[in-house]
Length: 304
Ligand SMILES: Nc1nc2c(ncn2[C@@H]2O[C@H](COP(=O)(O)OP(=O)(O)OP(=O)(O)O)[C@@H](O)[C@H]2O)c(=O)[nH]1
Figure 1 (spheres, protein in one colour):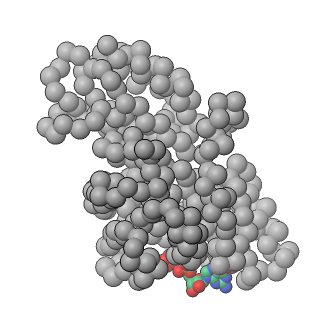
Figure 2: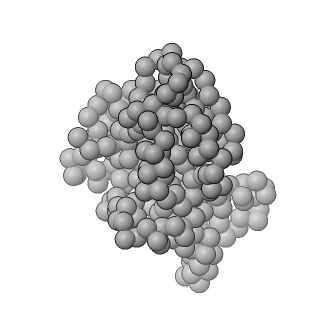
């Protein structure tokens, strides 16, 4: 069975994420695909869960943001969805204040990273909010830009609130921040499912590799170790990593040590801990413009 597609719906408060989710679920149901939804709200009461009909498995994460305070709960929920249902796709609606890369990180637990295919980040931008963004705090303006910069698809939504001239200038500004993303102007987040599901399929073609290297978008690679690893060579490999790799996590066995180790790495700092559970030896790598073929080759070389 192929991996479960995962889509992250990001975007500022009120930008239209729930409206988009509703549109997508309708189209998915028409295609008879089996989906699940994870909804994250910062408050203690879910407001949007009525959006999802009863036959679609729904996990709600309240009282925190998946990208920080409730990351562990999020992993458990995703894991149980994957175990309980035979799914084609999982849609994750994030809180309006979530940083998309942190959410991506949370989706890629080494426990199940080899079973999911995170197809991409879809960011919604409220067109008028963008135009008037100076009214927001500097931190929120940065967040808005980050949500755009890391998206694979950008929906510039609520364009009915802007004149044609303003639509053109907003669209130009947003596209300049992330020229590689597919940008679509929408009202009520009306979008074709095909446009969203095309995500990543293009970038997986080998001949696009050169172009891929220049992209600034976040990419992920999951390596499954089939044998124990030489620790010295592994550390040597870590020392020589490009600084475009900024996050790794997973489980690894070393040839001269008993048992399994969990491994965490962020911004140049590795941490190992002995693991008591028996879990798959997956290593998740997150970075900009990853050369996946090369990483795969290098890791295979340090396996004994
Ligand atoms: N005028 C206009 N309103 C829209 C459009 N898209 C969505 N809305 C409305 O904007 C409001 C917010 O939309 P939601 O889909 O709930 O936005 P959200 O991003 O899920 O909001 P939060 O969950 O609060 O972050 C709703 O009342 C929508 O009906 C649009 O294109 N134009």
